[in-house]
Picture 1 (cartoon, rainbow, N blue to C red):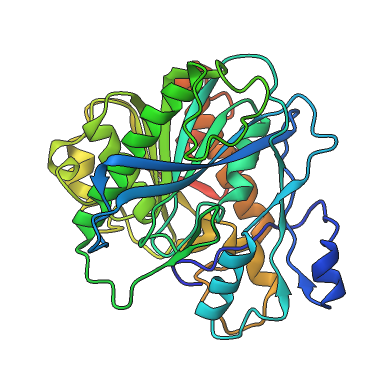
Picture 2 (picture 1 turned 180 degrees about the horizontal axis):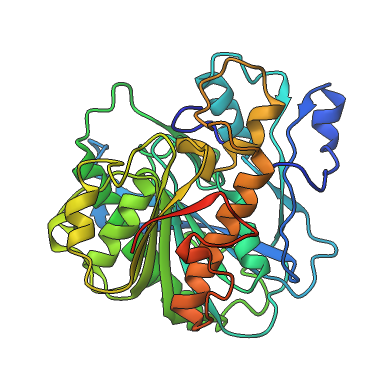
Length: 382
């Protein structure tokens, strides 16, 4: 799980184990529910970018993506909750881990498939996962943001994400070996995110961007406020968030959760708000040699914060899965208690986007590392 098994949530709200898993006698991994007042709806979209060819294909095929649009729902009754991973992707993940996860049932999310959207226009956030991770690997954070009124669109990047399953049951996994240079991989991700923004505009106008035109949830069209768009990601996904903001002014604010940076944005910087978050395994702002020049070239609101007693995957669902899995797996979650990590990251990310996209003041002083409620968040620079 070092850069991506991905897993689940901490303490709270256990879910019922799906019947097939229970029948198979598997051990359930559980996700905690979101904390906000709105239930979460979601729709998976298969997007095809015919303006680009797949860089890992010799056949000249167009670039394909899988994304999930999460949104505040009006009513989730009668709608099944999406699985954390579809069946084919789950098998591929377990194969990647060589049997270590075979006895476990991957969780069910708290996202109701195609539930009707709650009325209103809402800020939109793009999420890009870490290298080898999947778009669902930060469900704890994503669903919590949605429950507080955001639309969050999670994006899988085939051949860079871990396991990407398409509607025809194809599963794209990581090439072995992965010979793509990191800056080039981040550039592909940034192009993916720009394309997703284009497709979201189509959806918001009443079109259907799904390749097979599968039905969209009632009320979703017109509910996205694309004038208030942010981007965030973990690890390589954080680099992608910075890169897409460099290329596209539609990104109004961004967050990098413990990711080294790549590409022209390091030297060009940004003129819009950006938050860097690192972990306790670093000393000062030296997460990577790319951070200091990027930091020096940030020309708008900026902050660098640290999650105490944390390691690389403490920003993801993996921190909550770790206590539920066999000891000895390389999970990189540090010593921070899972429930504290989840709560602190949720609160900090929401405080940042509330400030930058909604104009809501940071009354709890989280973004100054001075919150008595979340002492795990420390101030490094600003």
